[in-house]
Image (cartoon, rainbow, N blue to C red; front, side, top):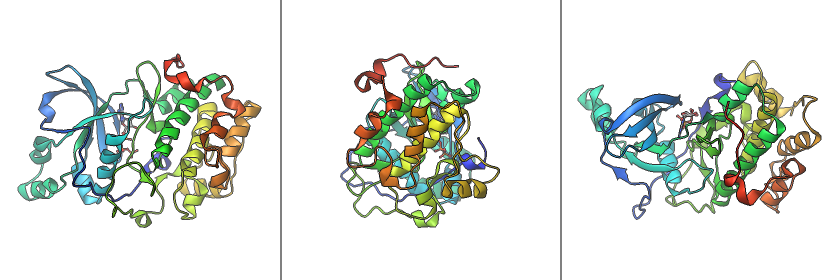
Length: 337
Ligand code: ATP
């Protein structure tokens, strides 16, 4: 599934409030302060590397921004927004941002002076030291196991629901929920990552400047083709329901090994999404099929979690029978493959 349809397309625009104090400080570090290890992953505008801080021995996932690409593609707005949002989120199911730094050495070493000056104008384009998720992507767990059992999928889906409830209560839509952005800790708990497509709603608890605007119109859609809901393809405004559709696609993928609308091209994927062309394998339980069917409702307000009862409807669905929502993080997660 790691084809064109799993690449993220996103665009946001936000500015930091002058009086705003970051929780995760901007440190005066350079890349030489770290012992670099393996590359965890490569995104569309960043490289994420395992890095041990030489003086403290602390291990981080350094998200090193491709400043040249970000400048050229005019992506600074959503790089800034990701940093601002991550700074204010605190939940065991959300990847934590510890600090940022402006790596002036790598910034200047490969460019001429003029280029360097341009790049320095990107004052918020900082590299990020994130909590290291050593268990890798949920995507790779699904690939290694072929597909997950209903018990495994139920546990992972419950941890995603728990974190999504928090994110939505903060007034944020993630807009890029997919197995590649669900990371696992060493012991196998889920953390939602990659807030590069996040959208703060008007009542958001997240501090952004009041005149922050979104230039969504510049894009055909925000998110990833295989997980994008039909209303986004029809240019409807973003709602929390967008993430619930993507959760439905992700749960389908956990149980079957592939995303529900997988096809040979983005165009064909979009046709299947608009037609709601879903085929359930016969080994899905009645509960799994029912939950996915409801999450993939064409009407975003009817998806469980989006209605007037909030997340209660979603958490009380029979698929989650047996889940103790208050002690999820204390439970033993599925074994990593
Ligand atoms: P995208 O093109 O999806 O928007 P991006 O440039 O925003 O990508 P991320 O998705 O944040 O980059 O990271 C790219 C990959 O790096 C992830 O899919 C994951 O495999 C890995 N990664 C990201 N954050 C971490 C982390 N905290 N710990 C371990 N690996 C990580």
